[in-house]
Image (cartoon, rainbow, N blue to C red; front, side, top):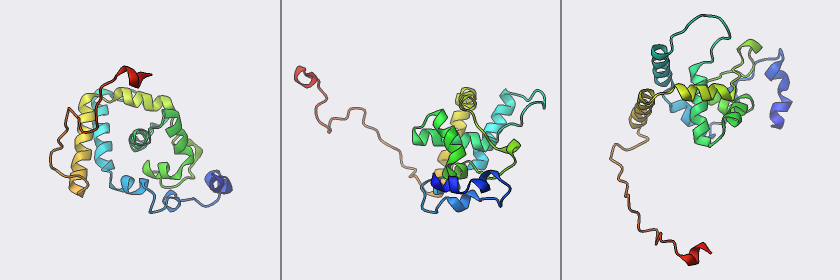
Length: 175
């Protein structure tokens, strides 16, 4: 956090742009995730589905947020177990989250800064239907198989786990 305070003149001033990728080390766990995720296919699927279900009405108002930012925030939120408020705050303060969202430079004109409110993420979640979720999962699974990150073998789940010991609750265990 002290680094951000030290570099504030780059973040909001007229100084040279600070590249987000330079601030996220190669060993950071978010870097391989952000580099191997099929962003183009995910964003195209979301844009296509939203264009079908929610046609644009008028070109008035604020410019829309890029779908890449919204999808990356939603995926990171679930991976970190964070709330909407926490992940929106991290977008403004954490270079790794900026990198995952595809933001190249941290200094931008104030009218184009991707300021995301928690209500925006909630509205995005409410618009994701079952068909879109199935499409997004299929895209991620195909990309993971192509990259060799998962095995195509079927996963076998035992519905009756008994090796962990007795699951019986007695009076002695509840006291």
